[in-house]
Image 1: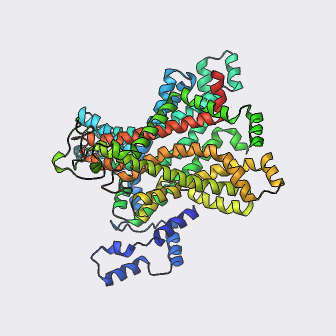
Image 2: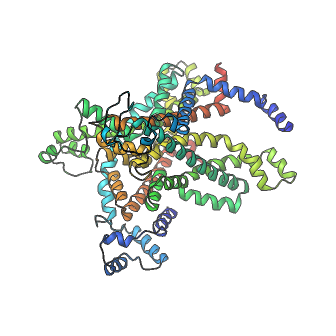
Length: 323
Length: 304
């Protein structure tokens, strides 16, 4: 954690780039430049800058965005719910499709379903999400006219049926306030980006579930359960799947934080007002504090998710607890 | 030579030639692996012989043709033309050079760096191990793609920079893999024997450790090439990778995205190329893993 903050800091400072210049804009005078440098503390020695930077980070001051002149942490938190809503929805799709598909593939190993499942799993991790997003737009908006093209809400419904901000998740907020029109509208906007984003985790989950199920179905205890005359359904879902789900959970957690980054591309296509759009804009305008803010936030998120996976594993798998 | 082959014969009950034959037979038996080999070979050929295959080589490299803007697929332009009138097929063929060289460079750079560091850390242990692994852990604590984006945003966009950023991000995964393998090899009899007859540590690592940990590394590198192709496309897409007029597939989808509703062919075909090549490498990597992993292979043979 600490190492990573250090690394980010030095990478951003050692690489020659004139931060002060960016802050005041290209037409600034020398005097303005000097003042900006002083304001940002750029004229002090490196180790001193580093020290102030870390202590500020810890107190929640993540710097000011060079472009919008707003606090970075506030921006990140403002854009986060939209991204989370999207990613969570994508994972719900991935889990609902991936686990049954993986189980079915494993149970009917080498059948047509299995081959189909394997191809689908590999295709899921191979398809560029942003390209799939475009194709979905073409099909569902361009040809079929059934789903909206971009954004989180139609302008019309956002004015007539404003959503009160409780959690920041539009779908949840509108449901909590019984705002039916806004609920339907925001859910409709959510469909395409979620599908586009779900293919990668879907592929991972299917593959992992399949290989774990195959391994477990060959275990002696499964044979014993079958010999005892248990129904196939009970054997598969109660005894085998329960154990197969643990490694799948690990993969899932790891890819979750990966998908936050993956969402960048999909968000750009759908002009989804989330972290991804924010980051891509920051990159285009070379807004370092904002980029670094997102990176630090993403890393914290990643570490927290990893911790949660470990805890979840200990909860589900008694062997881990003993160690 | 004789000593080695005798040892192998006793262990696996097969000579090296038989082993190769078995591997080839297993590759042929699995339709997915064959598809993978097929796709990857096609793209490699296209990339190497781009000037021969591309119908309009100069357009592939970026020469605009103002009078043929955004034409739909036809017999003249098989995949249509883009917003500058260039033949999309030619640009896809030239784009294969970019994607493949990117993927190969990243996979080779990161796997070689990672493998050597991992083997050294695992073999020597102690201080060396500690230092290498602490550094590795710092890198591993980042979400991989985010670190690459951050690096790229600071050193500036471009294809070479993207190679550097991604290799810097990916090597630690190989280090961890290589170290785990090395640690289990370190105590094996043949390494002990080499040590006993006074072979230098450096030679042991080079001649005895590395060849034996190569298999999982190669499998991982093949799978990573698929990811590298997707990442390169993603970088191109958000403007961090290759810059115009380069025929990078991701860049083509990116510029083409505004035309999806009016001129569907413009972003669709470059994206299809990304998909096909990534699919090829993934099939290939998966196939390698199943064939080279003796545990999985036994299952295959039982079924014959």
